[in-house]
Length: 314
Image (cartoon, rainbow, N blue to C red; front, side, top):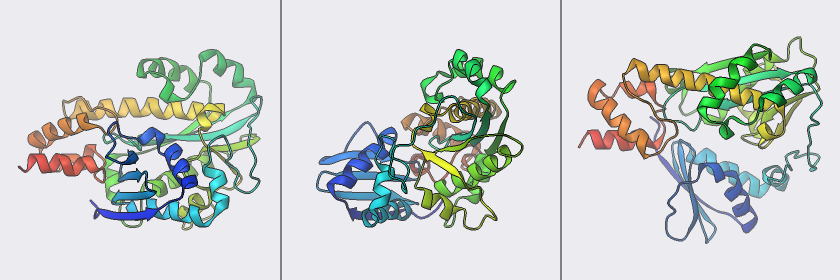
């Protein structure tokens, strides 16, 4: 595990609005006194206070804080982070992907889950496949139950070309460190599957469900020879582009299968997410198999690890 860092910055009202929107899917149910929200990114706890103070605590706190400090300095980035589809930082205009087009899109699953791998998928949707996917009811995987995904995806993968890469918990823990945070891992994996998927496919757009600014994305790929260019980055792309929605579903399908296999290996149900329930399960795992088991089933940099080990070591 990396060293826990605490970083505090001040943000203006405009940035507060951006942060509130950016972290909305990571917010905790309970909010500290005088705080607008508290969010858990997996490796960093973010607390935004009404006063404009933003506190970042975790192994990637400095990286997370630096992102918001750079936004304060570069107003062009603000146009990206404003939701409402204003994601093209250079053109500063709404990007609309026409429905009736062929595209390659990617999405990932597992980055917010304590247990289980990270799965990134890129898929190619030809415009001729759109009626088939629409009839199936394809949409973002977060809007479908596991049962629906297990029923729909086998039909999709018989017809839609895709590439998937999976990073096991062991691989994740071995690679995560000072020079490798979650967003860098995601950027590398997205670039890898997209590079494979664009080969021999006639597409009009390459779309990524945006998880950071375009500038940061390519900074993370600075050591990769010839990273794929020409990508359209869109927030909530799974709602706006069928190839991203398909990739989201396939990634979720594989994640469900893999986390179930992992649970079967250790004869325990591994819950999704990163809430208190995963810690109850973690305590049981460590008591039965020892602390090393977490290296193979969990993402060690998550704050849940410290709480599990603290409880076990009492």
